[in-house]
Image (cartoon, rainbow, N blue to C red; front, side, top):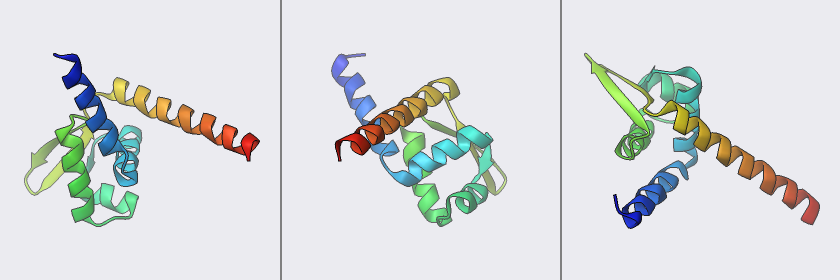
Length: 105
C-alpha cells in the first residue's frame, strides 16, 4: 500500500472519530461488546437514524463490524486491540492538553 493511501485512510478514521457521537459509540461498543442498534441508541441518547448513520461511517472505515439476525442488527469493534490503543492515545492527548490549558491560562 502506498504511503499516500495510508495517510488518506488514517485521515478518514480520524475524521469519522471526530464526531462526538461516533467516538461515544466506539467507546460504548468497546466497553460493552456486541450491541444492537436500539441499545446503542438508548445509551448515546440519539435517534436510531442518527446512530445508524454514524455506524455506517464506522463500518466504512473498518472500525465496526455488524451481523444481521432477522430484524436485529448487532455491532461490535472489528479490531479491539488497535481500537483500544487509539482511544487511549486520544485520551492521553486530551489529558495532556487540558493540563497545559490549566497552567497557561
